[in-house]
Length: 238
Length: 214
Image (cartoon, rainbow over all chains, first blue to last red; front, side):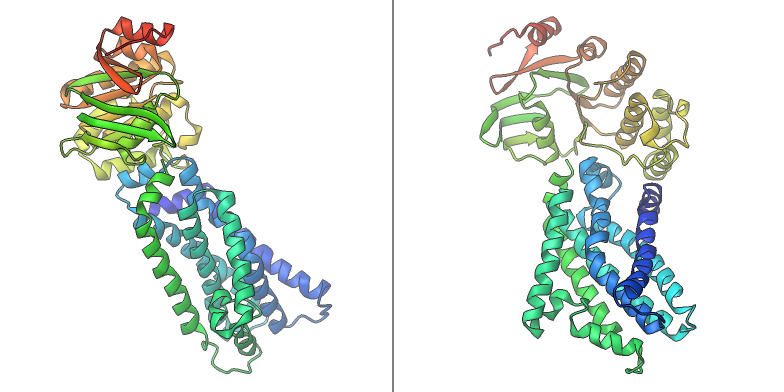
């Protein structure tokens, strides 16, 4: 894992990931002022606007970056190296998830701090961090498993995009399908989060269990897929 | 290592059909063939990345393939690779290989992406061979190397095959390989791997396209 972290620092993956997170804060702020015409930006305005940017733009912009974690190994034919260093398809996949976990924790923490500390909303720091982290992890894992299977950058990018849009459309047709766009701003999950930020729901950790159960299920399914597709992983990388 | 009734297809193209051949231990086996004759697909089939019919008998030995599709991530520095090897393999053997390949002449703080082709190939060879493999398939390994580096690698491989009871199959277009690494010579023709060929005949086949029949 130490070597994997070194790689991600040296190829600027961490830097780009963090940079996108910081740009999303700026975008969240600018959208409030230009589109929503808010003159006095409150904590509630900014935190919800930035969250919406993360959950709406994240699946588009972060996807392009995250899939390079695996597509570059396939393209550069590094999979035999991973096998020789004691990795199998599952271990390899989990290492990549580990990289996304690490940088998303740093990014979520920084973004939460930049939003919460100036407004002195310290009690919202941890809940906001956990919410952002759940969003980043959920589509990060999905991005990784799709490139794991489909090999090609462009193909995987558009499959991710297609699934994201179809997820929103289907989730809009029935409450039972809301898990297909769990963190989207059109879903009930967002309504509850809005109330938490506005302090209409007093327990700021109301959604944590539900959100992380969702992330955990995605992770378990993805790990199973990375095991089932172990031969494909091998062929993709040779 | 032995191929028994080995057949390989790529899409609908037959590359090999019912090949039966045994590769002797302690020998470098050079395989020459035209582009598209299936040499690299053969190497990939040994890795299990291409499906084939028949049997490739490795005798319970894990084969190692070193080619353009078995690389080390270029973000690593030379010292990262050396650290991995020191922790993972027999330190004495690794040190011996390191000296033989003159790895100390490569700046250890350099990323692999900043090394010359020859230096990259030496690091790659050190990385994969430190596991002391007994069956090695080299796929165009000496292509694009300068003479000095090629000769260092030839010497290393000649010593390795002699001292470590191993079998090396060298798929190549580089005729210097044949001259500097004496062994057995094969040509790929008519969906077969034809062996027992004199070195000069193998070179004739490659340069002049002389046809061989079993």
